[in-house]
Length: 201
Image 1 (spheres, helix red, strand yellow):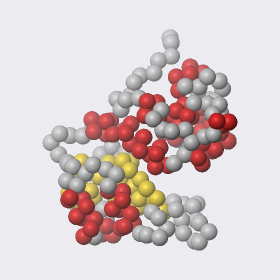
Image 2: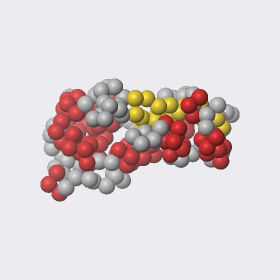
Image 3: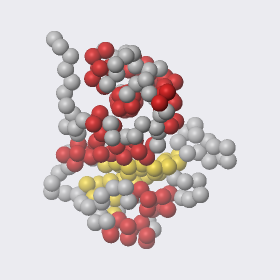
Image 4: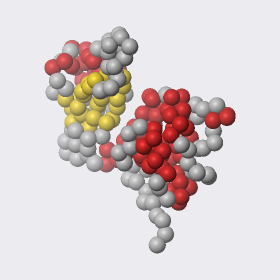
């Protein structure tokens, strides 16, 4: 049988990724930006952790998949993926992926009830900086599907409560209930949620 690829309910990942401006110089564009970013997304979804694992994943695929992703020659090595991700703005990639996954998440919601969205922060292991603080990420994720809807790094000069105001503004809160622990029980956070049409617990 022939090689087929079903269209995902969320729409075209490649179409979303093609909207991202290429941060590479003219000399570093041997491969399509959308193809490389789609490779990164697919490899991570399949469990790849790190540049070597991403490169191993794409090289283990059939050439037919390479062409579907947009490659016209053998896919790049881990160094090319590392170079690309050091040049690319994480927030730009995250926004593109949020637009891709949003229709899928919305399609899974019940029409008769609000969507529960959890707000939580975590320190990442193995990211201890030169001044003794690990990288801290604040995330909003859909409790029903487990999808991360938005995520940002907590700046070194602030805390989770202040960063919460920034991340809440990245998401439409209408018909959503934001759940969080006591750290986020701040008047300005509650006002932000309610003013945006959401509820909190």
